[in-house]
Amino acid sequence: MRIPPRPRCTPAALALLTACTLSACALGPAYQRPSTPEPAAYKELQGAPGWLPAAPADALERGPWWTLFGDALLNELAASIEVSNQNVAAAAASYAQARALVSEQRAALFPRVDLGASGTRSGGGGDTRSSSQYRLNLGASWEPDIWGRLRAASNGASASAAASAADLAAARLSAQGELAVNYFSLRLADAQLALLATGIAGYERVQAITQNRFSAGIVGRSDVLQAQTQLASARIDQSGVQRQRAQFEHAIAVLLGKAPSDFTLAPAAWQATVPAVPAGLPSTLLQRRPDIAAAERRVAVANEQIGIARAAYFPSISLSGSGGFGASAVGGLLNASNSLWSLGLSATQSVFNAGATGARVSGAEAGRDAAVAHYRQTVLSAFADVENQLAATRALQQQQDLRRIASEAADQVEAQMLNRYRAGQVGYTEVVTAQNTALSARRALVQALADRQTTAIALIQSLGGGWQAASQ
Image (cartoon, rainbow, N blue to C red):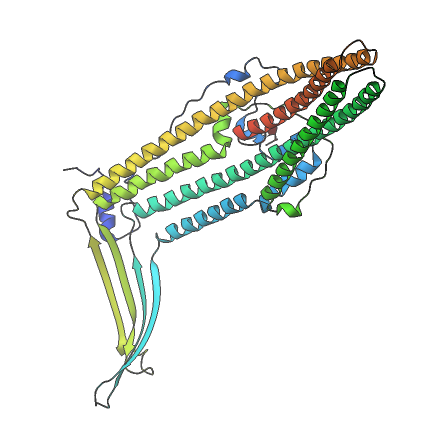
């Protein structure tokens, strides 16, 4: 037979139980935040050029991190996420619901007072006589929290509310990050369309030159057909990018809580800014990521459930009392001779339940262990996210430099091939190859810059928000 754990009580608690006072014994284990790996530094940060030392956690302000990208329209759109995004609104409602539950659980610690009034009139059969009875009473009931069960439920509700607050912060950060990614993807599409428009204009000029040379009998019809194929392929790419831009615009509308048909973003110059981001220390990460905070608070909730389950080993005590008046006529209802009162004390203890209480305690302990494992896994995944984004940031910066060199070289090759084609030194196939290579290199260069922006956004989310230093 399982022996229930001894409550952490002083001997005076038994006397207080007898006196029915407000003393509670804590049956659940004392909560301590579970230990997690805390590396001294990020591996991918060591030796990375352009990265600044991290500021202490208490000097970091999340703030409007999107302003780091220097885009006024993005600043305007991101600010409206707080009031317009429906996922954020749902998370805010869940947080309000959790706070209401905290108030409900705390109310259970105090007596309940009820005011009742009733009046009845009865009779029956052929008897013309009837009787009346009127009652007015004020009653109170209270369950002293001797074993800390109600206190544990209240603490658990508070921890659950804190987890909901972290969920709200996570939903807000996720929506803001998704908005920024879609916005820069749309601006990338604008840049790609500008490059394609320039490329198509060049292809049209070359097609005209080729047509004139064909008419003059200098080149064969195959050159004209190649020029037409190249121009048509570029226009197909242009149509595909336009479709992608429309999808990004619709996604932004939904994030802002608007119907896509009522929202339009005009093409604009791309603010190709990639902020230099100081990475936070591991201890900072634990304090600032909302998903980690939510997971840790849910460990606290599971810990309180153990105390609630253990309280079932001990009797449930409740007190009740009422006072009022009862009479057969309303006029004399409040006379002292018609006064009524009652006091009650009840205790309930489960004598045999085939081990159900022990099973609930074991289940609560297993639930706490599962919450701890989930919390530690969340922390490990967070560190991996940061390391991944740091590695991607360094690689993409190197790739952008190399793609710029490749693009400049491809532009020179294209110009040389066009000059040699006009001079009749090379065939049109070499021109097509050079033009396609140059356009692809230009598009790859702007794509590399967009990848750096989206990686910076992902790093912001991995660190739990912005990183502007604020004076305390």
